[in-house]
Amino acid sequence: MESEVARFWGLLDPVGHALLDAAGSVREYEPGAIVCHEGEPSQHVLIVRRGLMRVTAVSHGGHEKVLAIRGPGDIVGERSAVDGLPRSASVRALGEASALVIAPARFSDLCRKQPHIAWAVLVVVVSRQRDADRQRVQFSGTSTQRVAAVLLDVVLHRGVGSAGAVALSQEELASAAGTSRESLVRVLRLMREQGIVRTGRRRIDILAPDRLYELVG
Image 1 (cartoon, rainbow, N blue to C red):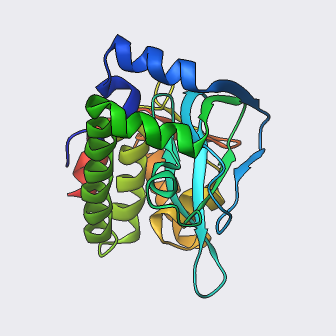
Image 2 (tube, rainbow, N blue to C red; image 1 turned 180 degrees about the vertical axis):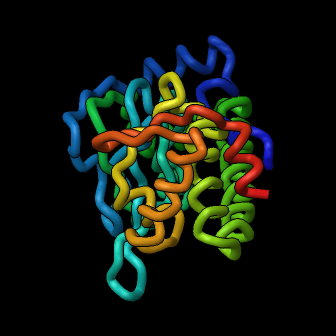
């Protein structure tokens, strides 16, 4: 498995934190709130403070695909702020969430004037690209391997789980793993029988992360 995906806030020193805090404002989001829409002009860059945000895009066939789950410390919308192109994905709050919101022009200005902030953005972009490459390789495996890989990605790589809990519905998990709902149900049943997970409403508790490594391999 790859090392943990770089999280933007953790790459900065207190000076960088203070500069970004001064450049933006904290916004609260209700569960299910749409943070931004795919295809719209960039309105702001977000740094997640609390909760989880789901990043999705619509495929050529018209199906919504879960691209990533972002949690505290993650930056969202940095690419549109840099290249000025419309957003490549939609973002929705999975539960109650909050984020530091910064206008694209102010964020770009900070990156030009503060090399350490620009470097942190670069590290995140490169790390996410490596993560995307890893996921493409994993998606060539079985349904069990793909589901296990997504669960590991959320809990271990993103570090957004609480006590091993993944706040995803079965539909969202199936989409992220590139598998059908029926296949996912079979995989989760297998994982429950082996004591790897416990499932609930929009919640999956990871009981044995080391067993997920074995399934991915």
